[in-house]
Length: 319
Image (cartoon, rainbow, N blue to C red; front, side):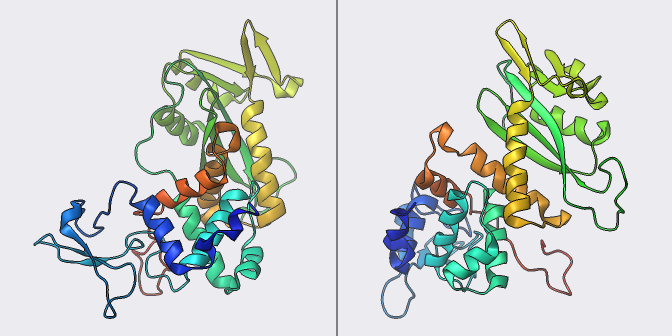
């Protein structure tokens, strides 16, 4: 990471823009207004009358100008690209996250701007579209829930976790990748639709002894549980290791980051923090992804996910 920080993309706007264009437009420039990808119908506008990095779409129905940041989380930002990329690299290289106060001090921009910048990058980390089901070839998929933070307006009780946010995570042991969801509570009504939509029926489901999985587990090719109440955490059946320890290891990194680095997260933003930790876990060194590759993956994810401030008189703008 030290060598990366010497890269000109953190000092020079032209170098930063060239780096971003090479990743967002890896297969050639695309007009964000009409989708035109014919390179012969896209012209780079140069000269004193145009700011750097502006292109013209020459499709007769379009004729719009654009830059690489249009229709991305960077759009209309006054923060220099050099600082955007520095924040991008810092967030992707920090296993347990990096606080907005730390980035604010390092980049020399206001805390408010830094906080919003980091939420834009978390939105870029979020996986969109239809994802393939986990455990398609009959592999093991671990499913578990954890609890974190406080629900606004809910009093803390002596026992249980009713006052906390509920997080459901699914981990495909074959690919090593995880998907996490902020759910209202750990009930069949909340958990079952997510499990059915994300896990193949051919998968080997592994859970703890929670009753919400009793009937749900029968829908898959095999369902095994470990009984934590009896201090059972791993059970071996032939060459199959039955456990939820892998997903619980992910929870431990997630909680250390949330409690030690971020310290507080309101429930309306929890889904973005989950996207951040999922992204780093799914693009980690153990899967052959280094810091540079991880930053490239995030740069690709900025397209089509613009995040704006909510205006007082607008209810249709994403918070």
